[in-house]
Amino acid sequence: MALNTAFHPNALYYGDCLEVINGGADSADRWPDACVDLIYLDPPFNSKRNYNVFFDKQSDLLRSSRAQARAFEDTWYWDEEAKARVERLRRAAHMPKETIEGLYLIHGNTDAMSYLSYMAERLAALRRILKPTGSLYLHCDPTMSHSLKLLLDGVFGKDNFRNEIVWSYGLGGSSKRMFSKKHDILLFYSKGSRWTFNKPLVPATSNMLKGQMKGAASVWDIPTINNMAKERVGYPTQKPLALLERIIKASSNAGDIVLDPFCGCGTAVAAAQKLGRKWIGIDISSFAVEQVMARRLGRHDQEIKLLGIPEDYAACVKMTQSDPLSRFKFERWAINKIPGMVPNIKQTGDGGIDGEGYLLTEPVEHTRKVIAQVKSGNTTADQIRAFCHVIREQKAAAGVFITLKPISDNRTLKKNKTELGTFRLKGASSDTYPRLQAWSMKEYFDDRRRNLPNLPPLADPFTGKELPQPTLWDTPKTSG
Ligand SMILES: C[S@@+](CC[C@H](N)C(=O)[O-])C[C@H]1O[C@@H](n2cnc3c(N)ncnc32)[C@H](O)[C@@H]1O
Image (cartoon, rainbow, N blue to C red; front, side, top):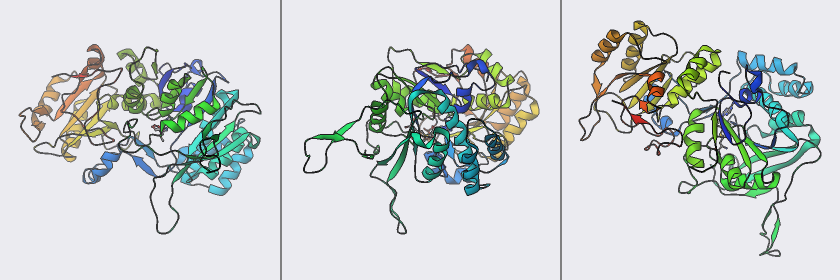
């Protein structure tokens, strides 16, 4: 990995949690054994849902799009990568052979096995960094909870299973053919035979004990976040603070380190901060880490580190010269720098589109779509022409061609810009914007991270509405 991702409490990391914890290619960044007290993880559930509420509603636009821009995708496939992963796990010292063999016997070459093997690698890494008195809570739903419990029995040892907690959240879809689904599952394991536990007390509900407090049962009635809730930040899978506060109070003490390796908009981090714990959050989406988390934590005196993200132009160059994963990570990060734009989750076969967003206001011609392509190497005239072809084909209002350094072939750029013309928005304003825009990381960093493409506002990818205010780390300014 080209960037510093070494262990640091009160830090947010951008990256795959497995890569961050194990230090990727850079063993100096590998986190030490037994360094955290509590782990809460709310990973993708294999729900087959793709989280990008607003884009999903733009079905007409999506149908014409070959790209798969998604905030994150919760769908797993059995492919060559999954096959290699299962083979790796069959030989791994940290995993009882029977666990993987047993799960493979049940699931075979399926999408579910792909998901379980993905989780197996990450759960084993998480167990390694847990202190001997530490605990782990895996948040999942009934889609995979039965198989994940078997997997956790294998990774932690079945004697270390503590509770299966039912989070009863009230709301939920109804069905004519089965019972309504109104709960999630939390699987609670300790690392060893001694673990931190501060039994939480909740108001008694039975008439006999009315007005008294009693120990929380393993069924928790905590309402899910409603549309009007103050704590709502708009992240599609946001969990309630009350749920995380109960877990953190029960299984850690003040000053302990709480890790959420799939932190999303940072509910666990915000709860840990509130309760006087140290915390660490990791997410594979830089949008989650940079934009939403900053809004969640707000401004305060404590030093917060943001790791795994290029801090200057030299770090960008280093990332693009590293392994393909770092390059892909760089591309996703660069796309996320344009507020409202979401990276394509596919590394290849994206039809020339690395990210897309939608204008908040409809343009006079074309669609509301704005696409982007990232080129980390030298740029050729053919590449610029090919991108213009994709802009036309997609009927996009505009396309942003993102490079490391400014494009040197000014003639080609100018010619294609002129041919593609400009767009303007419906309504009073007569402002026009070039349909082809070139934007480089060099310009971005040289202008102290304020230089951005010249675009009207894009919609928030989760809500379709106006984007919230700029974040703690970046205060972008549109350059002409
Ligand atoms: C269900 S959401 C977590 C929501 C979170 N509990 C909250 O309250 O906001 C799952 C998160 O895992 C992230 N993710 C998926 N794969 C990941 C990986 N390999 N490493 C780190 N984060 C990952 C996704 O980007 C997403 O934000």
